[in-house]
Image 1: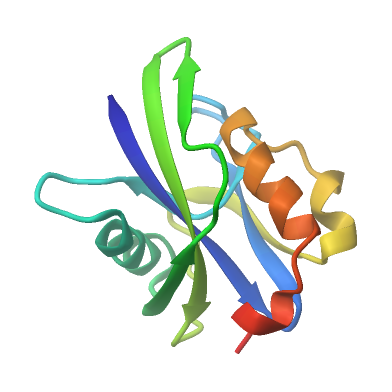
Image 2: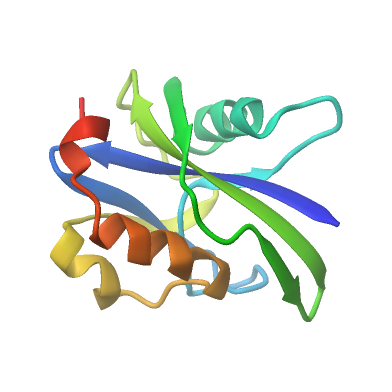
Amino acid sequence: MLKVAASVIVKDGKILAARRKAERIGGGYWEFPGGKVEANETPKQACQREVLEELGDEAEILERLKVKRHYQTPYGSLEIDFFWTRLKTFNLKHVAASEYRWLTKEELWDVDWLEASKPAVSLIAQTNLEKYDE
């Protein structure tokens, strides 16, 4: 089973969305910054590492979103944890994604999300983001 951790980054009432590069599985779809949980690493640690690798930023990982975690994909089983995240720095370099966008709650469904991200998007759309904003 592939274990993945993703960061739901909130700033100024907006959520950071990342568009997958065309050559990757799911290319062109949108997701939250994150990636595979490595051996001897917790999902929270994976989020911190991935934010540093993908965005060049340090992050404070907050609580896990209470959404569906297990998926069966054409490529195998997937377990994904989403975490509310605050950035401590704001370099926002573009490494893993072809594009980043800051979306308001009203704009969340304006982009085509990966299937595994949709339950998190639904929850975010109903959440008061002030608690997770800096």
